[in-house]
Image (cartoon, rainbow, N blue to C red; front, side, top):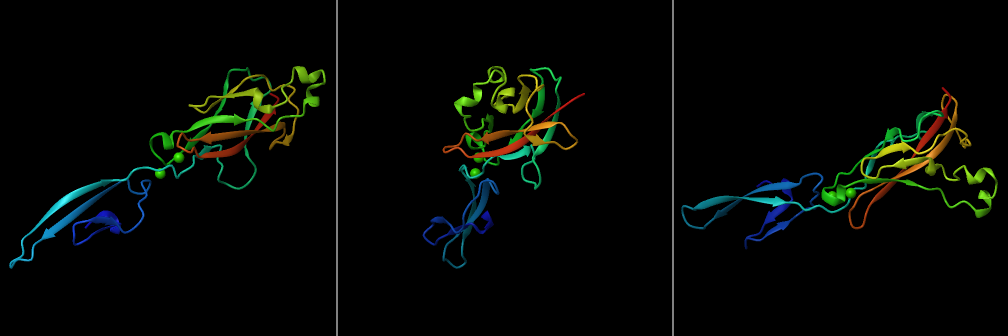
Amino acid sequence: SGGGGKFVVRNNGEIALSGQLDRELTAEHQLLIGVADSGVPSQRTEFRLTVLVGDINDSPPRFVFPPAERPGPPHQVNISINQIPGNPVATIIAHDDDTGQNGNVTYRLLRSRAAPASSSGSAAGAETPTDFADYFNLEPLTGRLLLRRRLQGVPAADGCLGGGSGRLLRLEASDQGQPSLKRVTQLRICAVND
Ligand SMILES: [Ca+2]
Ligand SMILES: [Ca+2]
């Protein structure tokens, strides 16, 4: 008995699976196995068996911040245009239901598709990063998002709730399983005057 109906004991003593196991639902099964002879009266004994379920990397990271699984526009973070570089502006959090390396999440910023070479030819191009991701550092292990340079003068590309100029930052969370599973989400950064 036990095992949630996932195991069968055959008459020859073999223990087999009768259903699929999922470590994320039940990581350990306790089986109580009875053995009886055919004598009259029958003698029986019981023993316990613990089955530990190994993990496979079947769960991708889930973003908790920014909240990714709700409808609507990307989550918005307001940052003062006077904010000093080096300061943390948000902490990215993703959870992974797997264990060990399969559940070990790291973070990175995704750069937009490479801009055509001609776009950096202008005088402003030399000082203004062409990629919004270059304004930030994302610590891979902690998820801390740090401002790398002032947002003053960032060209707006996206409307903001409550005004201000906004840009979208693309974030990736990946686990260390083989193969690795990844999820991408967006955060809207709004540069506000204060
Ligand atoms: Ca798993
Ligand atoms: Ca995983």
